[in-house]
Amino acid sequence: MARPISIISNGGRPITNAYPNGAPMTPVDADTPGGEPVTLTVTPGAVPVALVNDDLTEWVSSPPWLPAGAIAYLDFQNGNYYAGGAERAVSDILGGGFDITEISGSGMFVDFTTSTNRPDAIGVLLSDFDTTIDGGLTFVCECDAGAFAPLGTMLMILEGSNANTSEYYIVNEAASLGRGQIYDSAVLNETGPSSELSTGVNKVAFCIFRDEGGGNFGVSASINGNTAFGNADIGLSGASRIVDTVHLFHVDEWSVAMDPIHIRNFTIFGPKSDAELEALST
Image 1 (cartoon, rainbow, N blue to C red):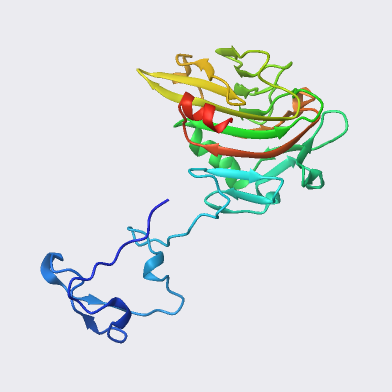
Image 2 (image 1 turned 120 degrees about the horizontal axis):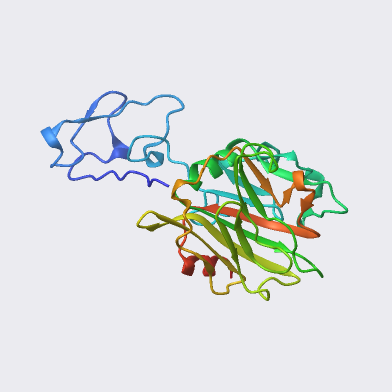
């Protein structure tokens, strides 16, 4: 996020004691090109100078609960939702088969057998996925599986709207049969050690389309702080990165959902290194 601009006074009249509307003011800095005077004009409803970016757009501070560097953040336990550069109502960024009544202090409940909650990213959240994936997208999720090890698809990104008919789709499966997995239907099947996912609370961090240099684009994941696993050369340079649909914690066309589990929160970042993924999943 851009920082506020700084006003430097070098012998000029302090900005708080400036002349009334429109009157010229002593140059703010002696080195100002041309030595032009500064003119203050007060406009009703104008943005205070202290809240202006270097490019003179309005500077908006991030909410204190937003993880540093997060592009999007959905905290179901505390009711904090951020996407598209601002706080949002959850119903504006989750749609499809999303059931808002499944959110409680424990998180957002998803279960294949006892719940019909099947959320998809919509609106600015879907746009955040779309604009981030080309440079490398990191998805971090904290979930509580209770007495059962997590099962099911955590994230599916599709070009198209249906997993059965899309020409190309990416499955990022962070929980499958008790093991962490990142899976691309066309070119990748990377599986981690079967001991990493467990009952209770799990935290998963994975990155896709990370630029590894030399035309290679990799994937990597870390689960519960364990050593990241993945592949730095998976041939994704020519893969489609069009994001039309994002299924969260389900693939409804396949009658698949994570079960049973409370999603505490998830975050979208830009590309992260293996070491950063390990820290994020701790």
